[in-house]
Length: 130
Image 1 (tube, rainbow, N blue to C red):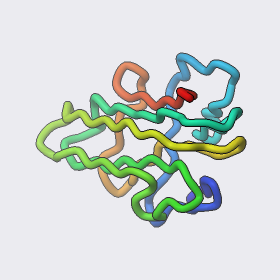
Image 2: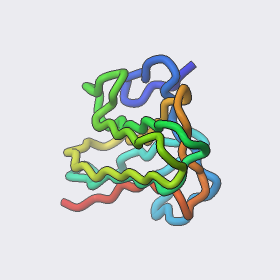
Image 3: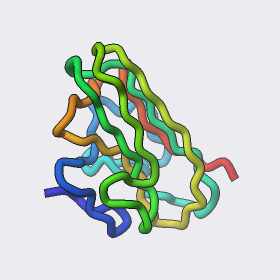
Image 4: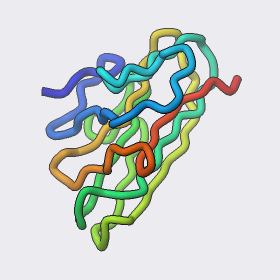
């Protein structure tokens, strides 16, 4: 079953993405065991992800879950890639006013093609900007 993020449990086949490697993790606020970034300091955060390569020629559906009021089917922000080849890329950058202990996660819908988890192809990040 899915794991809750800020009290919201993603619907159906939506799961938190885990990565092959964590390249930068200042303060260790991201856990690759849970796939969640936990906000250490209240403020405005820039949260982003990028997919540069998929596991197969099919659609992919990626959602950012960031707040306790996120939609269980779509998260805070939802991105689709087209299905015409594996190298379709997609990316999103959002800003969120976060409180201490709030969680951020990149989720994928496993009923579609999943992004490649190697750091050269897929990334997820959060940074305090104000």
